[in-house]
Length: 410
Image (tube, rainbow, N blue to C red; front, side, top):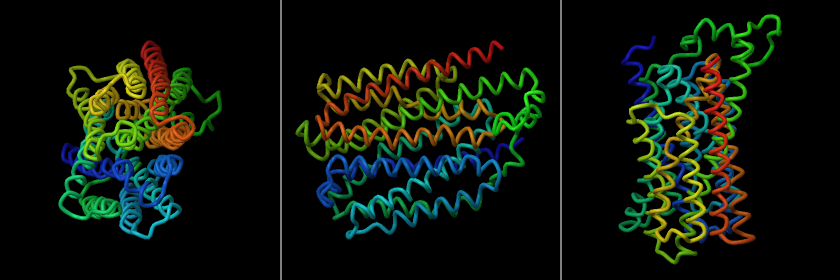
């Protein structure tokens, strides 16, 4: 059993790391007008930049999942932070689109690795209480994401801060995370708290090598429910991360070009979205009962209506629309990641990696599709189309809720 001091240290490192992660997530959207002007990007190019970040995240998360189930976590975490530090700190004024794409991929790759390490540590440390704990840890990312555009907008009013300077500043924070990681106990996979049943089931849950004769009816039921539940969770994270990435990437440009508002309003719109996500996570974290997949399904359906209304111009204030949308979506990712780890308790890192990796695949595909729609129709229409992805999220969360109820009955 992990002692309270070790748990607190893991939670603190995870919180600080997700602060840095949240800042990274919004840098591209917050700098979108300058990137478009400086590098001569169109919506296709901007969508591709966002997609490369998600591609790096997805590959990093998928690769890290099985890795953290097999090797020591500290070296993986330190190496991942070093990759982000190097990729962000070496951006400069002579960057071309191709170079930016490579650096963006590397930033996502490193962030995907350290995010998965931290998610696995929290799930293993807190067990059935992990979803609630992850709500608070992931709230740090939303706090940083909501504050970062405002902070850099304020700095630009008193200094000549270029877009690449913002990446360098956030990259340097990862040097501090490397130092902090040397002081935090990171248990290896051999010390993870697996039950005897989980150890016996690991072959069937992870690689399916056990024969059907070796599987008890209970283990076969766990395998069937675990796979189906995890598939629904992955579909939900795919839709969520894609919508989150697309809104972050395009809403500032929509605010300036389509709505005719200034850059300060654009920065506030991004911050309103992430502020709404933060508030949503805090509310769910302090709720009397832990939020489950059913709650996520209902809130995602509300977010779908808000996205369509905003894209069609039915909601006049972009800040209000984005804050409300963020409020509805705040608990999606931490809750679904926690449920993924619980669905496959014998291989927490793999389960978390699959859910996060498929989420990042959505972060690659959906911004690219949104950019294509914006090019061929209009950005407002493309933003309204995100409501369809949110309905897919609601349906997947509903399936997750149903399967978890079935498993509890069995």
